[in-house]
Image (cartoon, rainbow, N blue to C red; front, side):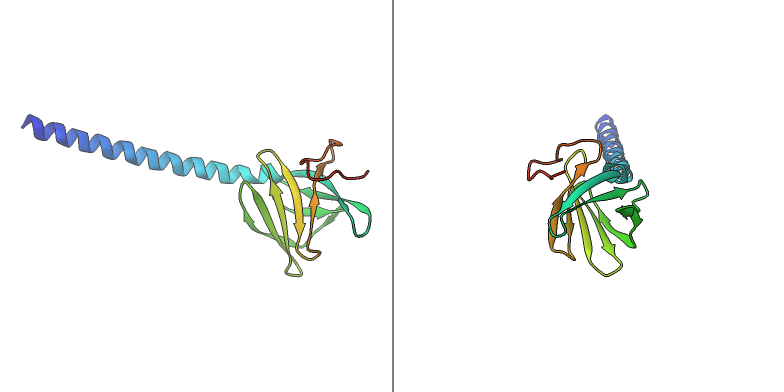
Length: 134
């Protein structure tokens, strides 16, 4: 009888431990997902080599997108810790790539061009790819 009781207690303990592990990992994933907009929120600049202008991109915490002060008609298609993808009103994708700390590049499908993003609060590029002429 004691052996059956020990096996039963072991089984119950194992089930409780596994269920709490799965519950906890699901909550952690949900917490990471809810913090993703803050990773991409901020204001950056990038140099367009075609028109030789410096543009400003702003992403709000609600993920609304502004380029050069104008709100873009773009919807969020997907978001991960590495990439935020918008679909613009013309059906083109804007892909914003991030490192562990902040967005570092913007790929514009319409222009088939990738731009290095620089925080408006610093003068150094977010990556070492190429520097932007001020």
